[in-house]
Amino acid sequence: MEIIKIELVKITPSDLEELQKLGKQTFLETFAPFNSEEDIQHYLQTGFTDMKLLEEIANPGSAFYFAKLNNSPIGYLKLNFGNAQTELKDSEALEIERIYVLKEFQGQKAGQFLFTEALKIARNHGLKYIWLGVWEKNEKAIKFYEKNGFVAFDKHSFVLGSDIQTDVMMKLSLIN
Image: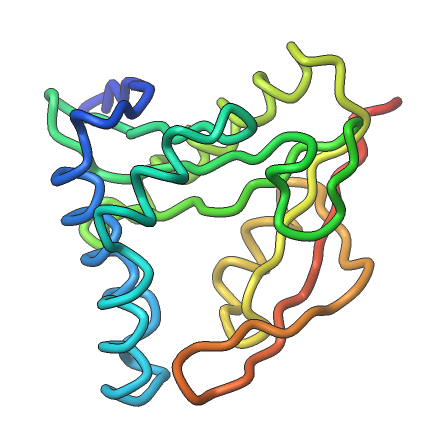
């Protein structure tokens, strides 16, 4: 069996176009089958604008990374620290806001690679836990996070176009 060598590459403003393309494609692959065309299109048009992404990349409390295979991005990771976190804003926590992998590379450990890298980053910062929000209907992602030790601790709303959805908030303690 061929061993896949994935690289973690920090995203900079010069990667904007590549991030937009990957972000839109992975969002479509993940959510289009379960949501209305109107809601998906609205999110694609507002969630991946140059201004929004450049602002997120420039935020000192956030970090974006590509998972690259043979120098091509196959997935990406967005992490938030401190006040950049979307909800808890806990200085002792790291939020994984996004882990997305192209459908053709799912099941090949790319998501696990990105998660493991996020875990290393959290530990290197001496943080106490990692948290995230995952759509309650995304059973595949929930199983992935549970397999990696996350437990549900709360819920919050996420608005996708005209649809108010529920995210399960999950947490992984880094303290033994």
